[in-house]
Amino acid sequence: MTSSDPVNHGADEGSEGRIVLVATPIGNLGDLAPRAVAVLDQADVVCCEDTRRTRALLTAAGVAGRGRLSALHDHNEDAQVPRLLERVRAGETVAVVCDAGTPAISDPGARLVAAAAAGGLTVSVVPGPSAVVAALVVSGLPTDRFCVEGFLPRKGAERRRRLAVLATEERTAVVLEAPGRLAATLADLAEVCGDRPVAVVRELTKIHEETWRGDLMSAAESFAEHPVRGEIVVVIGGAPPPAPPSAAAVAGAVADRLAAGDGVRDAADAVAASLGVPRRQAYQVALAQKAGSEGQSAGMPDRLRSTS
Image 1 (tube, helix red, strand yellow):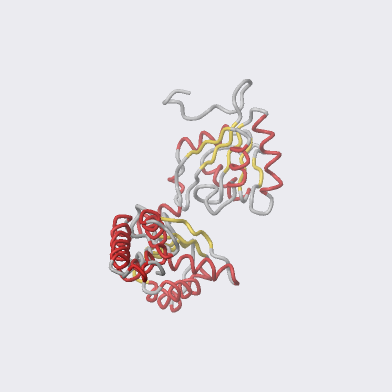
Image 2 (image 1 turned 60 degrees about the vertical axis):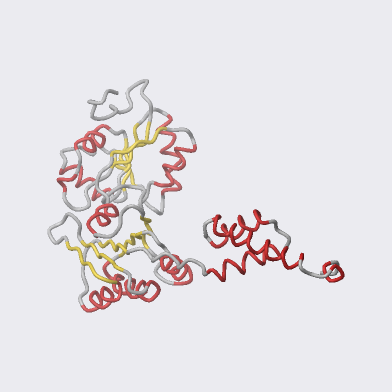
């Protein structure tokens, strides 16, 4: 395939089968890429969350479904994987879409891709719209390091555990949420994360697109008073890094390692790793403590040094 070719042209005789992840619009149909249209037109099967929504998308793009649509969602993905892999091995092109955005990100497709990769099959992507990335870049929060939390569990111990992880997460975090649960989730985030900055991004690329920016406590109050509709992404600023350990804490940790029998180098390595301090700092402290200990030992009378 040359750089000017729009797409691998289907599963003609002798061609290689493949899975193609195709990003679809998150609101504005104008965001459907020409290469995405070509792949969807030529694929042997188009796997989708909701066949009705995808059929409407194909119709708007001028692509005939021709009986090629196949449901692939959270409840049937495991069962569908073997059948789809067999089609790829037979030389067919399997396109995968979700209702909106990039498949396999908090949407079906990840298990299929993992199985295909493990089986040595070809997986490619037609990149495009993603609510996660779109919300992140308009949030005004740091984008150099971020994580995607996805949808939080609705309740229970697992929800509390994941909220606790977010409370200490130093990267910008992206959370997806339904409008009916937004206020409760913001309140929970405010409780565990404190006054962290947040952007609540709603209806991306649609007529009523909105980005609310502020802090978590204000967001919890605002959205409790004014419920909203639509697709929502919450982008949370990272937690501040923990304060460095005090000099006394470093000295105490070094003393414990030396007392346990470590040499200066080993004690410095262990303390640097456990407390996250520079090794040079830990080494200087260990060296000073070792020298002080030897100096005290040298100053003792012989009868005391032998029993020390």
